[in-house]
Length: 631
Figure 1 (spheres, rainbow, N blue to C red):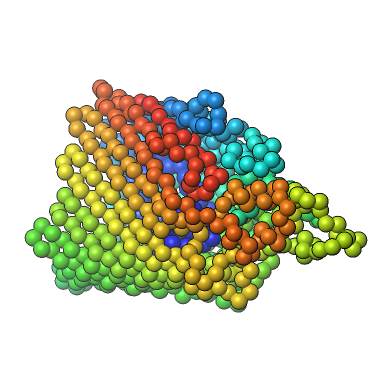
Figure 2 (figure 1 turned 30 degrees about the vertical axis):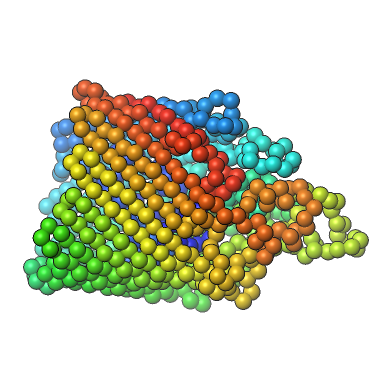
């Protein structure tokens, strides 16, 4: 549900994610970061980042930069703890929520180290549901006259239960209410960087890292058939590990006051291996024992990029990445990923105006850890099709306007074309289409059909071409102690062409599923007199997804044959969702000697369902009280 600038993949249009320059094997697992450990988050939207970061960056790039500074003789420890209650219409009492963290930071600007531990969770907001997580991280930094070296390590563990949605109305699913499917996720990252200043002109850097993940019994949310009811369909899981090494050199040429050029040259090598969970859970019968082999892929890439600036008024950025990636297949495993950007800057009194435009092209292999470990495939048949990689290219054009540090406004128009996007298409097995009396090899099931009577398989297919067009607006206003900001975006994501052999439910001209046509947010923050407060409202409007309640009922207990639940027949279960507004707020007060309290609320409008579909249930209005001590 949702995306960055429309659809660039089915299931989840995710960006490529780095932590301190270290690539993550599964970017969807970056859900918990201690705020005290984050210095900044760098975001590249669209496929332009692929010229620098390579394949799998067709949706953009996110780099999370963690803090490595020391206490410099000041307070070195931050402790916070919050406990709250989440209301729910589906259990007799509120669920307890917890969030605790300890961060220790020591050292100076020349040499520093830090460690952090976080834990938290949500209690039973549905019968049998829970979620708990823990995160630990540590790092250090050494600064010398010609060298900056850093190292970091991070581990994340989460356990949860995903019971059948209480919104199911059919008898079979209702009987499963409260049935718990335990899930677990572990992620671990280690890495180091070294920056060497050779001279005023040349700087070199090395980044080496390892990231791994383990997923067990992950509920599959990416099929039209009862995706929120894992016991009816199945669960996924597996392991993924990524080892990477990147070496780069940056040269600064010319006169910064007139014509200046920055050249970047980089080479990197990485090894990705992943293995799908062998012990899948399914109510659909299988005829043979399932096995899953380790898939190993090597990637080697080279990058050249030039940034040219003229008198701080005009800029040109151009880059090219040539990459050999075994995941792209043996026929065309070399990709060429270009990008080009131009910008003009003009100061008119206190007003600064910037015009910008950029083009980029990205590519994503057909085989990825997310598809292998998070998409359930009980018969391993969905991965046997020869698939082309997914690609996206396009331009963006925009304007930035600033009035000192008081007001800022940004507007961007994007126009992108995605091709070869891979969808997991359901189809009826040949035996389920047999009609009439039994021939000895197949006995038609008694009606109504039960899940065990279904013979629905999945096939991965390249859909065709998708256009993603829209606008993005962002504005900020700073009035001393009061800061206001707002965002608004529109997306028109449509099918331009379908592949010749495509057997799914999409047609030319259709809006893409699970993509809101509009999203927006408003926020206000105020600080003064020892008090802090903020209020954030966000909303998504108008998207199309499946009527999953009706589909689950038809799948579990109905007279509809398998052929009526696949292909173009699925269009009968499309449903337009109008949107949901979310509201959260917080107020805090400094008490004395580094001690402060916070009273916060999430989902203040108490909307438990309606987003992203009609069976997903989230915790209701949640109010928590916390204390924070700086020592």
